[in-house]
Image (tube, rainbow, N blue to C red; front, side, top):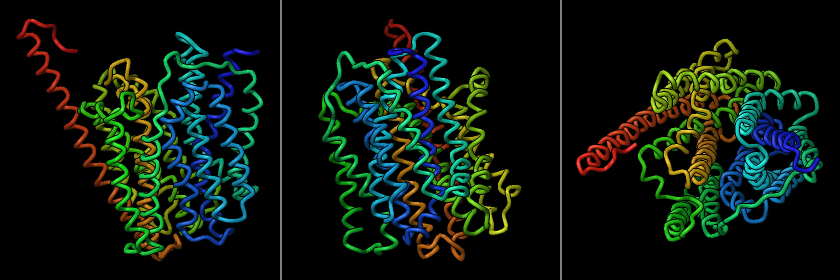
Length: 472
C-alpha cells in the first residue's frame, strides 16, 4: 500500500478537516471554558490567539523544514504534536496549561498543513492532481462551515473538553496511516530562515499580548507599553533580516507589485471580519441571546455555508467579469454585511441575523480560491510557492491580530465578562469599525488593481515604442 495515492488523500483530508474544526470549535467553547476553569476573558482569549499566532508564524518555516528533512517526516511530526497537545488540552484543569497546549498545537498544525499540500502534490499528477486539490479545498470549506456546529453538538453532549479531544483522536488515526505514506524532499531545498521566524513570531506574540492583556493590566502598565514598543522594533528587524537574505521566507520584493499587494490586502481584510465573528459571536449567542452551544453553532452555518457553494460559481462568474472586479466586490459585500449585522440585539433570532450573516458569507465565498489563484498568477512561476506562502501568512497574521483587537474592545466594554451590559454595544462598535475598514480596503484594492493595469499598459506602450514585444 506504500505510495498509494488514495492513502495519501485520506490522510491529508483527515488532517485538513481537523485544523479548522480545532479553531472554530474552540471559539464556541470559550464561555464554558471560562466558567469551568474560573478564567477571565484574557485567559480564554489565548485559547484561540495562541493557536492562531503560532500557526501563522511557523507556516513558512515548517514548509522549508519539510523540503529539507522530508514531507512525510514533518507531516508526521506536526500531526503528532497537534494530537498530543489536543489531548493535553482536553485534560487541562488550569487555563495556563490549556493555553500552553494550544500554542503548541498551532506549531503542529502549521507543520501538518504545509507538508500535507506538498504530499498531495507529489502523489497526484495531471487532472488527478486538480481533482485532489479540489477535494482538499472542499474539505477545508467543510471544516470551516460546519466546525461551529460540530463543536456545539460535542459540547452539548460531552462538554467543552470534547472539542479538543475529537480532533486529537482524528490526528491519532492519521498517524496510523503515516507508515503508508511516501517520503519526498525538494531537490534544491533552501535553508531555514530562523532569524526571520524568531523575529516575526516574537513581534506577533508581543502585539497580541499587548491587546489581550491590556484591558486587564491597564494600558499604561509597563509590560503593555514594552510589548507595544518592542513589537514594531522586532518587525523592523524582521524586514531588515528578510531584505538581506538571499533566500528570504517572506519575499518583500513581491509587495512592490500593486496587484499582489492588493490581493494580500483583500485576503487580510476579509478574514479580519470573518474570523473574529466566528470567535466571539458564539459567546454572544450563548451568554446574551441564551442559545445552547449547539444552536449557536447551527446559527453560524448562515455565515459559513456560502463558502462551500460559491467557490464553484466563481469559476463561471470570472468568465463574465474580470477576476479583480470580483475580488473588489467581495470585500465590499463583506463591508455591507458587517454594517448590516449591527442590527443584532439580545432578542435576535436566526431570522434577524440571517441577512447579514449570509451577506458576509457571500463576500467570503466569492473570494475563496480566487484570491490564491490571483496571487500565484501575479508572480513569476519560480516564486509561486513564495507568493502562496505570503498570502496565507497575511491571512493568518491579520485574523490573529483582529481577534486580539476585537477581544480588547469587548473586554473593555464588558469589564472582562463577555456579557451584557456592554456586550451588545461593544459588538456593534466592532461591527461598524469592521464595516468601515473593509469599505476602505475595497477602495484601496480597487486603486491598486487599476494602478497595476495602468503600469502594464505603460510598459506595453514603451515596449512597442522601442520595438520590443508588448507586456502580458
